[in-house]
Length: 420
Image (cartoon, rainbow, N blue to C red; front, side, top):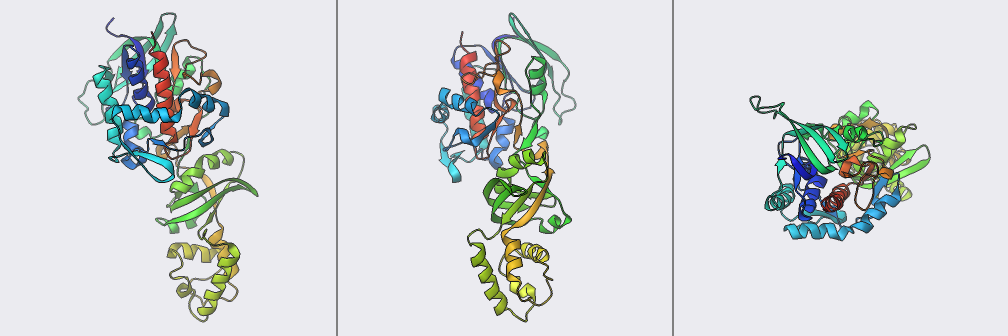
């Protein structure tokens, strides 16, 4: 039959494209289906268009799941260095950024997608875009994959609604997560998994900007500065991060906040959660308090605004002064050093939630790892089914860790599914 293939792959994202390369190299006839108008749409948006595709410090500790042993077995089956070798053989050169981050040398995400597509073109692997999978059924002879042609948003005259059924001996589900629905993200893949009998844990956004309680946050909109952050529930320290924090009209973002976001949202289910920001991390509290006391003495008899000028961003100083009970236009009050030091070294933000999947980089939750073989990503419940990428209940820290896991799962799944 014309619509029959050894392997059908649902999704032309990171894991899907990597799986297609390896399955075809193994000798299988392969078809890739994707609902977007171009393959690798999510890849193109990563790393602000530069694509932080991996990291030199890939370890199991950078991942979050209900089964830490699972990721250890995955990296045993495919050591992180072999993923870099995979891209090297495709012709991709890369450069190292901060904290071990790896980017294509051109600093263009398109090149990461292009080397994969060039290989698939060389291997004669067809990719059907604007094709959404509606349903999958499994039988003794393989899989039946029902799809529908999607009309692009910019072309109302384009044909749509045409349905096609494909047959596959093996099926790789690489449909991606629920993040960024505006560029193709969605929960469709999880629905297919459930229809095939797999358990799917609740989904929630991870690596996402956070909302903060309090109207004062609007007054800090646009401020960027480096800080050390501590995530707390009461006196319990949950996680720490350091780097840039960006204040917005709704809350906070920036690399340091994104690093804390998953833990913050998880903890928020059990009660109030707070972020303590230290805006002067290079000085201990006592040292900074002495500095402020000496500065206050030097500015005695002058407006507090004069005292504050040059210390930090004026918006931050105004917010800190308000928390310390200091009027901006009043004279520098005696004994203000301790309260102001506390406000600047422990600026507390109460987390209210997140911006949701529309602004999240990763989906947490998904297919139960106990139902998947870590060395091949094969389903333990449905013969011939493979599950990769964000569909799995495992997610990594920011810094290229999630894309690395996507490549890894795709490569292993493709190699296994492509075997005769």
